[in-house]
Each structure stands twice: as C-alpha cells, then as structure tokens.
Amino acid sequence: MIDKKNLLFLILISLLFFASKWVISYYLYLETTSIKVIFESVSDGYYYFPLVKYLSNFDLNNSFNPFFENLNNIMLPFYSIFVHSFFYKFIGSFVFIIGEYIATFLFLLLFYKIFILYYSKNLSLLYTLVIFCIPIIFSIIPIGDLTYFQSIKNDIFALRFPRPLITSLYLFFFMYFIISLEKIEFFTNKNLFILGIILAITLSSFYYFFFLQISVLGLYVFYRYKISFLNKLYQNWKALIVLVITFTIFALPMLINMILHEPDYTRRLGLISLDFDQKKVLLFHYLTNYLRKEFIILLSILTFYMWFINHKKFLNYKLINYLYLFFFGSVLAPILFIIVTNKSGIFYHYNNTVVIFAFLLILFIFLDLFSSFSEKYLNKLFLNVATIILITFCISVNIYNSFQLNLEKQSSQRSEFTNISNIILNNYDLNKSSLMTFDNRFMVWSVLNNIKYLNITNFIMTPKKDQMIEDDMIKSFKFLNIDSDGFNKFIENKKSSWRYINYDLSTFFFYKYMANPIKTYNNSQNFSNEVSEYIKNSSPINLQQSIIPNEELERLRNKFLKTKLNNFNYPDLIILNKKNKFLKDINKIENYCKIFDKNFYILLVRKDEKTNC
Image (cartoon, rainbow, N blue to C red):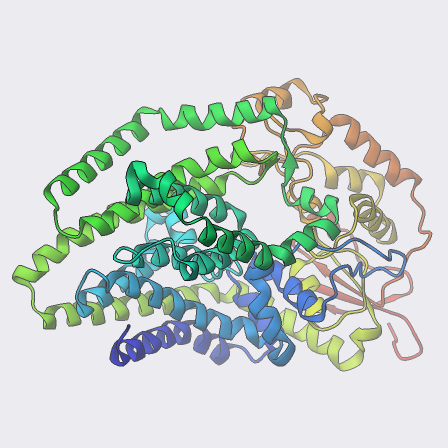
C-alpha cells in the first residue's frame, strides 16, 4: 500500500505538471472549451474527440450527409475512449482537460508502485519522476528528434489522446500487475480474473500492446515455473476458464463493434488481409533485422548482464528480470501477430515498443546500480533535493514548451479560429446548419458543437464507404468551381523526404492507397518505372506510404468529369484554410457572402434576407 504522504505528493506533482500547461492556456486565450482542447491537443489526438462524443450518444453511424443513411458502424478503440465518453455526457469537452490530469497522476502512481516494491520511498519518488521527465527532456534537446529517441519521447507517456495517454496506462498497469505477483501464486481465480480484464481492455484499445502482453505472459509463466509450466497450466484449468470467460465478457463490446463496423473504415486505418506469401515477407523482414549486427550485440550484452546478475543474485535482479521479459516479449510480439492473424496493422508500433522496452531495461539497470551507490553515499536530504530539482526543471520545460506552442503565428491562427467560431455560434444554430470545410480542426469543432451536416469529413470521423467520401470530395470541388486540372493536382502522387504521400488526399483516405513490396491498392503494379522501383525498394512494413496506381488515378479523373451536383447538400457555411493550396484561387462563390477574410481563414455564408454582401 502507498502511504498517504506520498500519495498526496504524487497528486500535487501531477497537479503542477497539469497546471504548467493549462494555466498558461487559460491565461492567454479567452475561448470555448472545445476550441481550447483542440488547439492544446498533442499532434492529431483531437481527431479522436468526435469518437468520444459518438460513443457518449451511442451514435456510431452518422454520415453528416442527408443523402447517406443506414451506414454500418464506426470502429472504435472502445476502452481507450470509454471513460471519456461516459463523463462527456456530463461535462462535455472539459473531460479532455480533466482526463490529462488523471492520466498523469495514474502514470506516476503506477511507476511509483513498481519501484516501491524494491526501493525506498525517496528513491521510488525520484525514479518515478525520472521515467516521467525523460520524454519531456527529450522534447527540448536535438537528440530527441532522432528516430529511436522519438519513440521514447512520444510513446512512453505523452498527452496525445488516446495513444499513449490512455493506452500506456493499460500497458504499464499490466507490467505492475505481473511484477507485483512475485511473492504470491499466479494461478488464482482473482489474478486471472484481473488478467482477463486487462487483456480484453488492451485488445479493445490498442491491439499491438495485446500481442506484447501475450508474448510476455508466455515468457513469464515459463520463467516462473520452468519446465513444469505445462503441469501448472493443467492443474489450474479452472482458473484458466475464469480467464477466458472474463476476457470474453469484457471483449464483447469490441466483438460486437467488429461485426457491425464498416470494412472500408478499417481499411482506411491500415488494417488489411495478409496471405501466406505476404506473411513470409514480413517474417523474413523481422528475422533479418533481428539478425543485424547491432541488434545481436545489444541483445548479447543485455543477456550476458542478465546471466551475471542472476548468477550473483546481484541487487534487485528480479526486477531487472521482469524488464528483460518485457523487452524480449516486445521482440516476439510482431512475430506472434504475423503468425496467428491474417491481418496487417501499422507495424512501426511494434518497432517502437521494442525501442521503448530496450530503453526501459537499460534505464532500470542504471537506476538499480545507482540505488546501491545511493545507499552507501547519499542521504535522504540529497534525494529529496534531487527530486525537487527534477520537478522544477521539468515543469519549467513544460512551461517553455507551452509558450513555444503559442508563438505569434499559432496565436494569430487560434484567434482567427475563435473569431469565426463566435460569428457562427452567435448567428447560426448548428443543429440545423450545414458546413463545408477542409480544415480538420473546424471539422472536429463543428462535431463537438452539434453540427447537423458536414459536406466533407476526414477518414476517421464517419463510417462512410470510400465511394461516398469520393462523391463528397468531388462534389465539393465542383461546388467550389475547382476545375479538372486543380482536381488532378490534388490527387496526384507526391514524394516527401522518405516516402510517397499526398497529405491533402490522406486527410480523406489515410492508408487506403498504401504502397510497399507486399501491398498496393488492389495489388496493382500499374505505376511508372521510377515509382515501381521505389515501391520495390521500400520496407515491407512501410504502411505509411501512399501511392495511387495509374488506373485508379484515371478512374478518379473520369469520375470527376462525369459527376454532377445532384443530391448535393448546399452548405450554409464555408470555412477555407488558406494553407490549403488547392483552395488558393477561390475568392468568391455565387450566392455566398464573404464575411471574414484574414491571414489564415475565410468564412463565407449563404445569402439570405439577413445577409448583405
């Protein structure tokens, strides 16, 4: 049990970290909560805010289009948004703010409870803050932008909703649960009941962690019971039934959602079917990388160290053993996933997990060595001072990052966003209005503010079929008087620094047109020689690369030419973001008044007896 003094200290630390972001936001901006949470959201986390509202209202198939009805359901990361959805019913968008505080506190609490099993209270607090502050520190030093360090910075714990803000809590609770069972029997009804809940929640939230957990469980049972593990499983078959039943019950929401969801939706999210040949390519890729010299050296050093500390019973070797199990489990997880499923996900999540647990294993080794040093040479006062210095430094970095986020350009854009939202809310009833915008923030804002119709939505907001999204996109272009040349430029394949991706088009189709050696759209090979060669030389797990085959480009071009504005819902409001280059030539639209035009946004409203241009 954690004592009240340290519990209160963790509550206070969480509040200080929380305040270092949100007090600044409230000080700088007078705006509605829905705007605040969108602009303060880390990366693209705000894309998931509408899903919270959908679940809260049990409205999982809204098309936001009067001509598209009776859709299949959206596929939800159920348990990563469930708690937010429940409380959204009572406090609205404010739930995203409170959620950050609670998640921060729970993260600190979990690691404190892990460390307190092996170390003093003072060291446990210090070590907990080290884990928490490393991603923050990496955010301001150049090394944090390197590939592997980005995983540490962004995926151990960050405020991006719902991953890793919520999903990391499930993973590290699982880690704490496994470690906490060291001195008690594992195969009890209570333990396997809890384990069934953890596994079901994780699978329904972020299935990559689920396969890591399964890998770790297999290693853990073998580590703990050695060659008698099969006999142990047989002896405790009743407890295993508890596990299966509990898992099934808590996984039911996800299973029902899978049955009723729209297949095009999950394909846009990168979930595709794999045949045997594709599996072989993926397995070969991972095994080849695991046999690389650098990885073999790292694994050999870590394994030798594990042998040494276990042979000598050195320091808290059992804690390090558990971290090694998680590291090795992360290595096995993608192999397990490829073998047992017929689907492909976004494999870089598995790669990131290997990096995270390799880092945590090495960090825990150094922390364990430091504990021996601190017991001999450092007193409690020194540890307390070090803890306070670390807290102060990390809060200062948080404040610095918050101000950096609100530089003049960002501040001006945010002010324009607020001005437009005020104009709309003061003059229009969104429950009866239709909005056209290509801006993701305004899409999310409008959903959170009960918009009735949206002429176009991004890839994650609705369970529309791809054909419906195409229709919406093309009709919106036609309505805006963008000609075929403009449309062709909008859909063309574009190359960035390390991959092909058209960011504008990906807003609507995301991973639909993924292109790598094992998968192209409809398995097409109809690309230019240059593009074909690039695809061939790409990594088979580079599912973030999108290239449209030539015949698909031609189909879309022809569809654009043939499409008329039949069954088109003319918007009441149009918001254009000037950063969208494909919209740069739109100055006026017939029967619409331009009532706002500044550095970032343009707002046009449909003419009626109240509006004068």
